[in-house]
Length: 592
Image (spheres, rainbow, N blue to C red):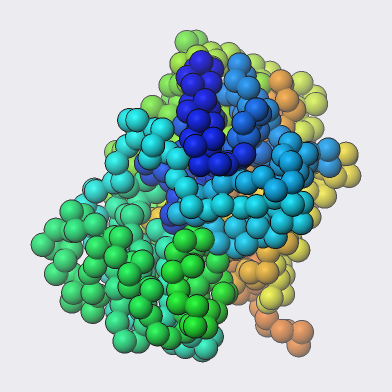
């Protein structure tokens, strides 16, 4: 693979020389700022061989580097081995920023290239300013991959389908009306949307253009005057065309969005973090731009009663599948011969038997022993370990159902553990419970709650560098904004109806990893003389392994939560199980 990467870098450098560029920056994104792009836009993966969801490659005429976050430090080191690409670990004090590195590698007056069709406008503006301060110039005119990627996949043309209102709880027409009200309150007349999950939510449509993410490649422009969906005509059927027209939606070609936007004669609401530089620059200069977080994104994140009930129903079916999976795992590991690569297959087998199952919500992470310390580990035939009856196995998986999306991590003891393992596991559990039981005032941001999950680890000189929680879509992307729970500041407050993950972890490189993840729903708790207070309702239905728990480390309130959670799991799942399955679940949910 390293020879292949070398040839690809050479091709990019020849392109750079032809265009007078001295460096080129390759982000992970597509024209829709997707975390997981369709294969046509997987340019960063193609040029580097790094398969993680987040990272930026920078290539000069002599050197190359990859910047990525802590989730991928170990994975990136493995996948870049043998290539000339140097790994730069983001957020560490010794790591230079991309601009600092470029300033050290290039001469003043030299040119740095990006493709303005896949680079976020806000990031491009910031990059331009930072490079100018260092005497460098940004050029956004070139897309080298059309020229050098010979077998590049096409832009997907897969048909999409309509998600019925019995699952969505609200018609597209009503959503559009609410969006128009909000946009007009912001002082704009048009809302420009490029985010694929937001478009899918607005129009109650789903697709399969991106693995695990039920979205369809498109743009949208919404106003009181008209709502236009820009989409390849090949993706339409008579049924979907009639549906959209009945909802008051005008249909135009995918690439026609540029001509349409260039002719708008009114103020435009957009989010420059979620619009490409080229599309942003298409808005006529005389138009007023309201550059704010999209009101549609916030609406999407606040689930209605139908969506919440759908999540609960999906959790029950997912819980049944997980009980059957963990029963199989327990027996199979004892018998021997189980490998990591078998885990995703068995999970798919059990989940696929459930009603409303569509597919995985992301590629299953199944890490045994040292592989569990790789936060976003992806098993391959070469890396797959045999799961022996000792130590920890970490399984992070999820499913897409027509009525909800699931995401769950369990770390299970598959055999004897060291005392350090047990202590580490109990610290993660304490952090999980601390967040799950939080009561917080209206207006609280996720960054203000993040410490609850980390404090016990910080007290012991331990930390994890990924976020504690991410939003989750309703039969949509498993990673959904705008809310999250992490150390980084995010102005979005947690509101009732938001579904977020709760997933603290602890990772010892080369030894093991521990993560416990449930999905939690923000709900109203009480109103006092000090205002409204919210709490979390745990939605996920699956036992948490209690064999590694050091009970003496838990406060009585933490023990009470764990026992109550397990009663909740048993009560909800037991009516759906066979007698043997109920017996197994009863044992796993016994009070400690």
